[in-house]
Length: 392
View (cartoon, rainbow, N blue to C red):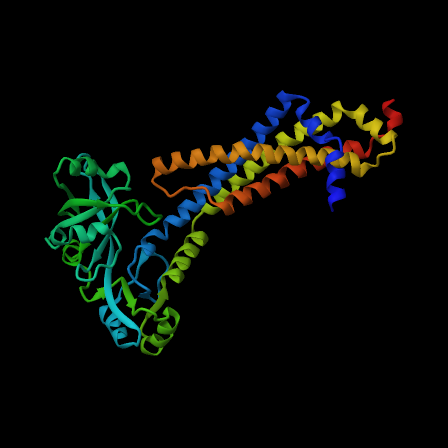
């Protein structure tokens, strides 16, 4: 192994010399690969952040198990079930407490423009908060007052200057479902496919905003377990009680997977951004192919000399493949650095959680090598057909 490594180091780095011989061409190649990486990172980052944003409300649930209707498909179209079903599981061994969570879609009227927009309203039980936001505990006494609410500050600007008004020490008044509501503070959750803005209210305010809803019905039931209790074991113990009751109990992970699966199947986001990744891959492939093919054509006499000296096709082809691998590796570095900067910019503008992950970086690096090596392989066709006698 040591001898082989020393022998490798003693070899003339033909591929590197070919790549670096023309600095301008090398920079164009690196720029092409980096641009391709930027396109792929942009598309993959956005699609991941959009899908992951669907899990944010579920991640904020203060529960080990979640009860929903057996007809549940996604948080955007929840089905009601009787509140009594939730309290039935209190007798199951391992259950510590239960908490109701009401969710409804309301109509927000922006005061300045009188335009109407959808808003998602979460009604929580203040005795046993259903959502893990510190602002709920901080504003507990104020939320008990009918008509007070918390506003998601990651909502779009079309909902008005809520944050500026609150910074001035004044509550923000707005109409929800033709009823006056007062925003007293903010929290952070972010938009989803189902909603572009979110509100948190106490149960009494929620029922005031949605008078047609049955007070005895829930949209989500939260179940907290005793320390050391197994969610799967407690879930199995609940099945005989809930059989035929039109409800189902899931872990938070199972609910998140169900939510993600729904949007992956029923939205075109994945397809659109996958096309974007493909475009980036093709653009990079064309650029690398053109550079390597041009280099092969310009160096035909040199390659012919090598073949005349007895070097076989695999050797000369390997030189071009090594050139493509060098371009892939060197071009990936600025590509990933630029993408990190782009992610920071997108996170600030869109309020989405867009960040670089190791898995995504490895995926794009693998795609870059496939792109470059594939292009290099195509560029070597002329070398296979090359006859030294034709050149000289």
